[in-house]
Image (cartoon, rainbow, N blue to C red):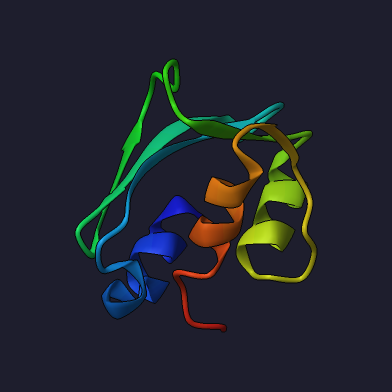
Length: 94
């Protein structure tokens, strides 16, 4: 599902932005991903999310998938809610 973000990313919407966001998905098929948006580019790596300006916590992979497809706004936010809002607006809809 993380690859979905890379293929739906609209770089023109990220011009001039610079932030980090962590995604933490619990349970089977879960994991952690570090997202860096900088100057209209998106980089996502699996691993450490410490130090991210905001972290989105999902209870399971199902909640994460529904959120990624824009079907729900699942996920608990830790940190800067404005960053999560900006991140959500960087993609075209499926």
